[in-house]
Amino acid sequence: MAFMSKLPQVRFGIIGGSGLYQMPELTNVEEVRVKTPFGDPSDAFVVGTLEGERVAFLPRHGVGHRFTPTEVPFRANIYALKLLGVERILSASAVGSLQEQYAPLDMVIPDQFFDRTRGRVRESTFFGEGIVAHVSFAHPVCSSLGDVLEDACRVADVKTHRGGTYLCMEGPAFSTVAESNVYRSWGMDIIGMTNLQEAKLAREAEICYATLALVTDYDCWHPGHDAVSVETVVEYLNKNVRNAQLILREAVKRLQSAGRECKCGSALQHAIFTAPNHWPEATAKKLEAIVGKYARS
Image (cartoon, rainbow, N blue to C red; front, side, top):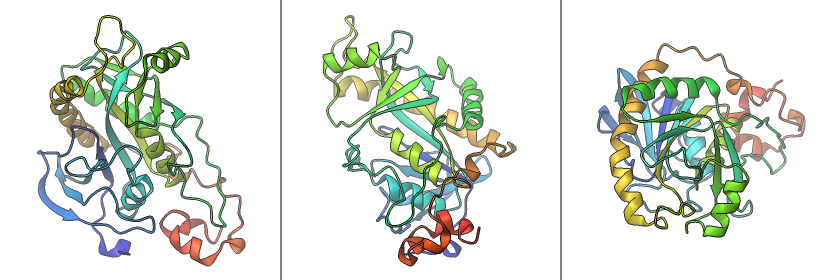
């Protein structure tokens, strides 16, 4: 396992979803492979300079889009970002719209998540094996980071919506019409397949997290649109990716002077229920990057 002292240290991480596999604005790039106690991340990190700041970029599904949403190594991805010193994660993700007002090519910055994944299939926590923690997740998105994203969206000529609920489904198949209509009746706003696990793990890792959701389609509920197809998704993704790159670049620029006054950095302060003297040595070592500062509290 690579130690933190041997890895480049950066403050900001970007996770790119379907279609967003690279950040061409990055300069002085280096490829960094990070080993974690939870296996290998989706791919090597591209660490480079963006607006004068060193950032780490990771393609969520791997270069060439090799991982299904269920197969994405979420724990390894977030733990690796923690090892790199990342304090804030900007996540870009393609989504379907469940409400009329979110049209294809719009951007959404959701502030809530709803879980429709299969918990026994996807790992959503670092804890267990003798160390128990229950983090607060009522407000799963860092509102301060969301503010920065919202401001950054003004640099792109796109319609942006702040707030709303991202329903995270299992996939990889898209919804049935019946499912889509039920989600709409529940008041869900957009639908995707990846961001919930990232948000939960980022909170446990005490990293700020926010989503820039790229609307590609109306899922399959809209009577005026055909059922979602790969061709439609790809078409709108290609149109939206460039806007997302501009927005993320502007967000990094703004973050450089933004203070970190949220509570994300201390999310575990009162969340670890197991007293340090009861921590199994192997588990404590495994979670060192996350719980180490609480070992003597």
